[in-house]
Length: 183
Image (cartoon, rainbow, N blue to C red; front, side, top):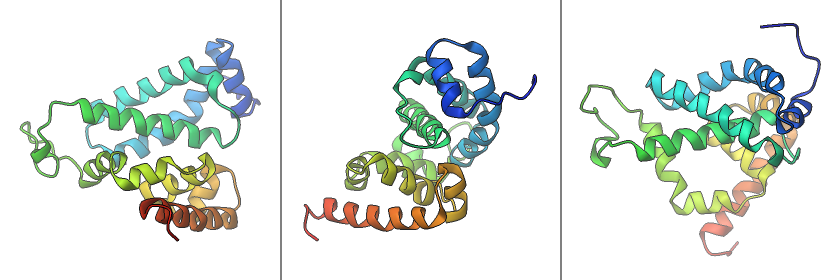
């Protein structure tokens, strides 16, 4: 690690979009530690977590220009990371009936990994996808990631009261979406 970089995460992403490798390195140093821990909560295969972490920052390098600045960079990075993990788990040659038990090599797959895979293609996943990015980020942080309101507030860079309000509104919208728009 070098000297601390005074740029904000959003400023670093602009620099990454302009192909500034040093800016990507700073983002990695700031975010890889917590991102790796959170990914490890979802998958107990350290090699896979390391690959997903690397893939996440490759995706950041490739897509930094797409960040619209309408949310916290940490939430955006987490979204990339969890999608990378789900994609990797989905494409693994693991039999579906083994997901909740022991894999042939003796590695136990966490039940929450299987749930995360199932959520994406269920009615809940469709309802989640229909939410605005702000509401989706709150639901992902508090429900899928199991963060407290305070932790989600810090991650998303919004007040705790806003997290609570967005979570309530998101649940209402999801409920309506799941029952076909009926309140």
